Image (cartoon, rainbow, N blue to C red; front, side, top):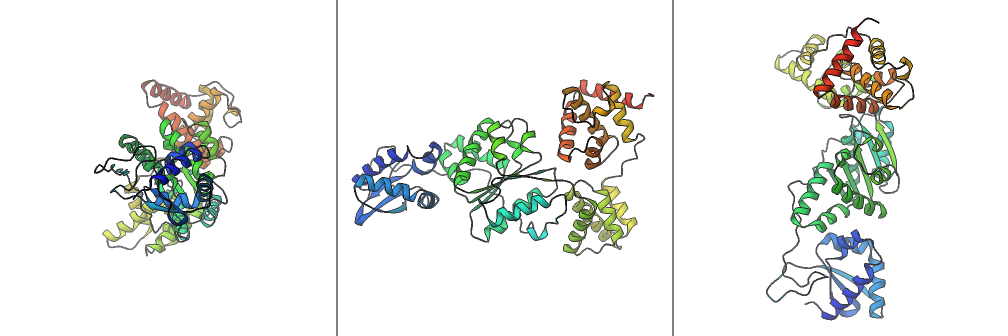
Length: 452
């Protein structure tokens, strides 16, 4: 039975605690609690779930004990009990329910659930090279000492380079230490938040995301343009970071280049460590092919491994796909894996592009001529709008027409990194997806092919 005196003491305590904690913390952890009884020198607090009991005990125990002891005029030991559906307690800011009319329990439901971890995506199976060494080392560090180093850790790079692999590896390593780990995609976070609003269960949503030791969020760039979701993630991030909980985020680009991202979130994402992953070099690609072949018990000669590594230069996922294709082709034709067979298998999946009739130098020169800017401006440091737009178009044409790897494009245009090239190509691709843009593209291509 609920003690009326305990209820009044706790109401007074809540009034004082509300002045000592942030509004999101109060709404998430304290608002739905009740005072149950004060028997035998203990003060018992009713909570809606075990998560809340554990969080209050570990994070706010001393503050709550001091507040309650000050009201009672004596020291007390705190205990927590989950209030049953039958209704021993009630909402802290509501009157007790009438007999026989128990309040409905707050239950958070969502069609999206936490993604299950892939047991194969571990640190042992992550091939380290110069292109990903910093990201891998930082991921190891936060898995071993979450919340103590590199918080937050922000990993960015193009698709298929191993960002998700590192998140799963962090989660698997941390789970061995019985840490509470939550791995989600940004889309899941958004869907959960939308459902929480529609069902009126924001507090349950906050408990789910703010009661973890390590929060891992994949593809955080999808927060762009979602103002209310950004607002909620801002408070979630602040609470976790203030409590020393680890946050790890991945994105296809650096925080500063995510369009539609609030400045305050961009600033927080850069508090810890930014670690980029670039496309693997030839040595790393070969190591990945050989490691995957060994793992899947596929016997391939060094020449075949080299062919696969040469045909997939920007994407680790593509490397795996080519290897699987080659093995499947050999299995279906009941023949050993040879250079000839591997070439046929890969060509059937992605026919090799015909060599460009134009050199990279001719494309860069043609773009500069079309926009009437000095040839030296494209690889130069200037960020003036006309020059930046021309540079982005040069990146796009070098990628689409000349089929150059991102790394080589970056070198040709002033040693810019691959993420800058990706950003430029995407921006121009959107621009050329309109009737006006297609006309301009045709004009630029004609200018490139025309005599000087």
